[in-house]
Image 1 (cartoon, rainbow, N blue to C red):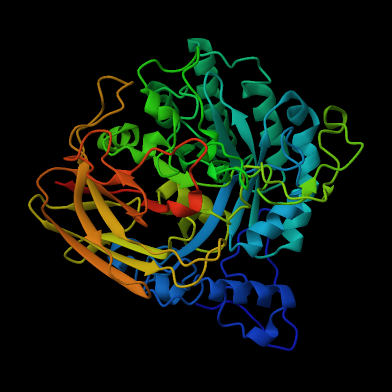
Image 2 (cartoon, rainbow, N blue to C red):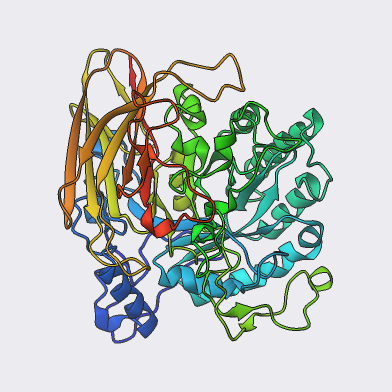
Length: 568
């Protein structure tokens, strides 16, 4: 693959952050660019990525930042060709849920988050300030120059503009668009027309549910009319308040499956679980709620807590996420920081700011002490969403998310994941559908890059176990509010006996006589419990997090999105 670099004494790299796409890697990631030709900032980032095992990890195909030559082995050419690279993907780490001084409950500048995300190894990120009357009126426009400036200043992290949508009749969601001349206009019209807070449409009524669908349809129409090149919607912290009912989630996805593509499998605010007095002594994800007037009555009380830091909809084997996958509905999970106010940081809001008048707070200043009661991590410091992208570009990241080429981890539990379903010469990776003849033999092959350097808490995580979760595809659910599926269970667990390098696992799925899917989960083994549906379904799943005593660094998991087998 040619990167178009001129190997002279000075290296200049143009990255079209204003809406174009780049097919080459940023210089810090591009190993064809010698160290001595990098700027000091680029060299610093390359050194950090090397130390943390994210660059040159030696994983044949699944390294997080594996180059094109490495990634090409992930999926054979017979599984599809992308960008002329025989199906190879770059695995780019990112975060789609980040708040700045343009949110009423946050304080950092855009550039603060972008610099931190870049330093913590993220390749892409989305600025998602809260939808509100003030944001809709002036904030959505005012933040854009800061985002554009950050794109120019930090040229090896892709910075999307989005917002956190107050979904009518439901919770919050990330909405973001491909950069371009109309990004502000489309987001502003969307927020003014469809935000639940702006439109006073928060109550769980049929009319408000219809308004949410209209908002998703609006985004699809902007893409169809080429006002923006692309748009995506992901539901945020879906089980936190119990107000995202199963039928609403299905309706969002069914209305526009190319726009509404998934949900946070793990919420942000993970530092909330750090025990007092050196931490907030609260709940991971700020999942400390109980049912309210608009909550879906059938959800159990345990759904209002995280499990190993993950949302109950994701962490429950045979639960709501699996009930969607059992219908054959692509619905993907992510993980992110939801960063507002970072634990143990020393910044406070600057003086003399007027959020309602200015649409933002004054720039933060040093506060003189450590904010031990704050609940968040910097983007990339703890939670990462890894996307298989055909190139280093905005569109490739959006395409990878839409396709479900996504795995997520906490605390740097692993450094890379290459998962494939194979039958003969055919193979697919995460999010893929393997079409086979009925009765064909199918095998799951997984290669995992183990953590080999300290994470941001200064220890090297150890992967203890990997679980294979399998479920039948049973077709559309007659009851749109169902949130269980009886056939899904852990079918195989692998104990990991290595602490360095990579681990290769294989599992024979047998002859495919009916459609099914598989997904992966891994743990450091520090906290496990029998799953909600019993030991026959999940003998050693995540344990429910304890409010006030849930140190996120002592309970690490990774999850992958599913792959399907479809016999004919």
